[in-house]
Length: 364
Image 1 (cartoon, one colour):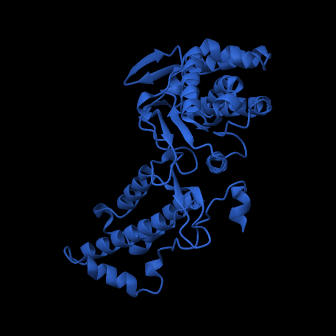
Image 2 (cartoon, one colour):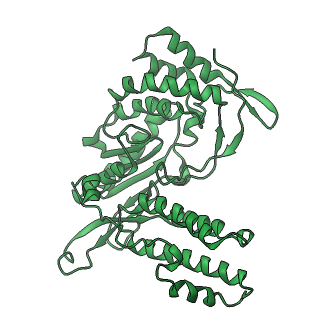
Image 3 (cartoon, one colour):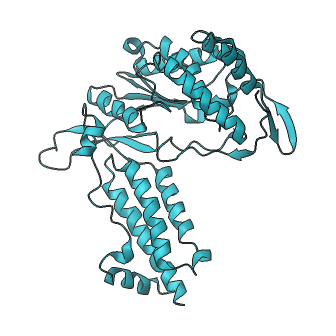
């Protein structure tokens, strides 16, 4: 039987490099361990059933599909001239999905009454927040292993109704959406259609993150899945005649990296050995750069590594009681053959190309 979920309500910031772009804070219900085990088991059973139906426009939280697969669609479509972009996401998607409509969608593919009964129990599980227990009537509790699958199952109803020929190419990463359109009129029609369809599903777009952008040289770009995408002209003699969609880490992603580096090199950790600090920095930098390397990120990588060097130098200066002479610490680092062991991010970047699988490019 499904146990009552005793949950903690914590801010959720999904811009993990391997998951999603940063989206602000909203409430997350974390099931107890026993419930998470049951949810994981149910996911193993249900995922292959719904994967057979999911459409190519859906990328989030699916086997063998990543953020880079979704971003590759933007590269390909912009190369073909679809440069009017509708960018938006769904307001409080996980917590706003109506239980009755979600179960109706699941029942279209699942007839086993035992599984359906278990799913209903999961959706009705109570939540403890601030010492009080409440029972939600909407939403798939964000924080459980099954929640992303349930969200994709429900939003598959949007995917099925989408007409790419008339409205543009939809790219959906769970509740993050962009539509690549050829004209402003098509983009406006796509936005109107999104609003109508989601309204029928009991959902709505987040107004603060909804806009139509025209990708032009020296114009505005689009932030999607942690990357800033912008139309640029080639800088070499061989590419000066080309205008293409480039991407690099967004401002939020860069600020996240700087915050992490600052935390690792904080004053409170001054007594730790330098080797330990550098090892933690390397661990973070490898993961962060491993995600953002597939892009035009060389300049940002250099800035982030230089910032890490400066923070280590500052920490060493404070440890040496040289509070106003961080240059002394930097001089020691630069004098070291390997910069105190801090990894280099040079040569990691793999620029994306239209109609070339990013995984193939990365293996070269």
